[in-house]
Image (cartoon, rainbow, N blue to C red; front, top):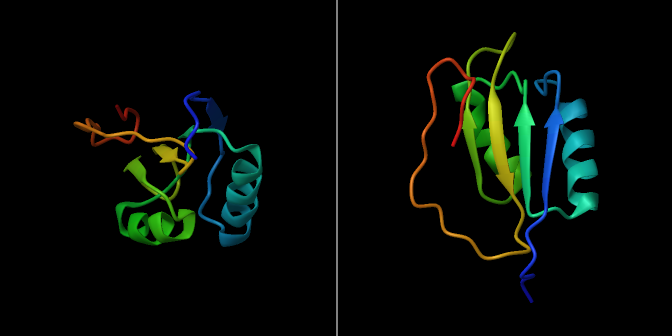
Length: 97
């Protein structure tokens, strides 16, 4: 049953290009069971987004830049119902709405 309460978490990741670090962070986030996770400083590249999406397993959006800097992501959990009507992201990996 989906919850009617939405919980949000924000985390500065300081880079998630390492598969081991990404696995640990995703495990930590899943344990917390928040509805939405806002990640900053992910260092994801556009080429890595499909892989990250499959690894997370739920809906997610990215504003990626390079593997060395910037990047933000919004990860959703499956514990609530939502509908995304539009997505805005800048090309420099600093903003995602």
